[in-house]
Length: 389
Ligand code: GLA
Image 1 (spheres, rainbow, N blue to C red):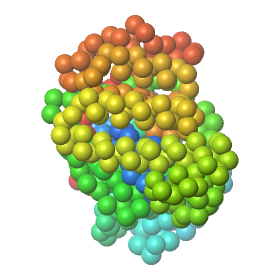
Image 2 (tube, helix red, strand yellow):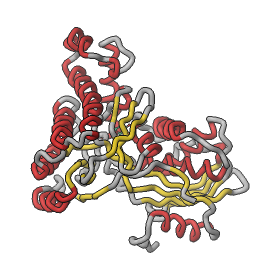
Image 3 (cartoon, rainbow, N blue to C red):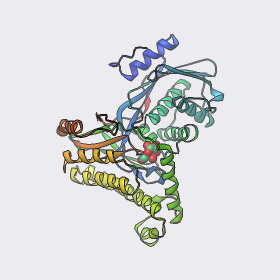
């Protein structure tokens, strides 16, 4: 199959739909990817995070069928297809991973009592895969909004985000928190989101004027991600239960100084990362509102060191990449690894006029362990998921 690399995801989904199903799509939905500026692994500890949705999307072109069969075309995976009955959506045993997200959304939304009929869906996107930018959450939410449009019901962004998280937890096998889905659901143009992962309150925080969001893909594929992710989650739960609280969100200074020392050494370090990174989110919100780039840089650097030393989710090549970018930025912004860890992307908030210099420094100074160059994406903070047509 020939792929038109100039075409937008919307155009590719619409063209793929027409080729596969012989008629034009009737509805189109989109959902963005996300980066997290600070607050890593805090979501399942009910703390704060500070993500922003970015202008990289998954798009689903859709039409209803008059039976209960769902046919799916994945335009970006060599035209792979899938087919299942709405009533059998939960049966993901023999399905490839990409199709499990689609089946998961159908199963969850149906389970919630929403009308879900048969459908034809064509999916296309421009979210780098396996880079930790939440291509899966953007797929879940784009499918969810396509189903809402086809079946004529409304849903709040929070409920859609929780449906996506549920689909991922139960049907795709990752015990993720709600960060990715909330970011994709509630993104605001030009803003990051101070996200309270307990109440699901979101406060949009404008990105400082004149800054760019750079997403630097290290090309280190995130190995071990699920097992290490689930292990971190267990360690955080062990810390919360050792401290006698529901979640690490509930640990204040006094409790930490009285009881932190009683925790197992590794578990204590894990908890220290969560507690400090959640606080850094609130401090970052203030620094961003004041346009204090020096403070933004300090917080992002500390967050990286905390992930490296206490949470142990970085790898040496990513540490070097973040340090290299930070060196170019100096006091005028910050850089750190973003996402679940063990590879993926470094994010930088930096003055727009330093973008070329950062790019040049990355080309000169970075190669992944298997010799690949990093890819630098200059992104803008984008609006949240919804129906395009
Ligand atoms: C992954 C998970 C999120 C979150 C981040 C780390 O992206 O899907 O829920 O835990 O890692 O902040």
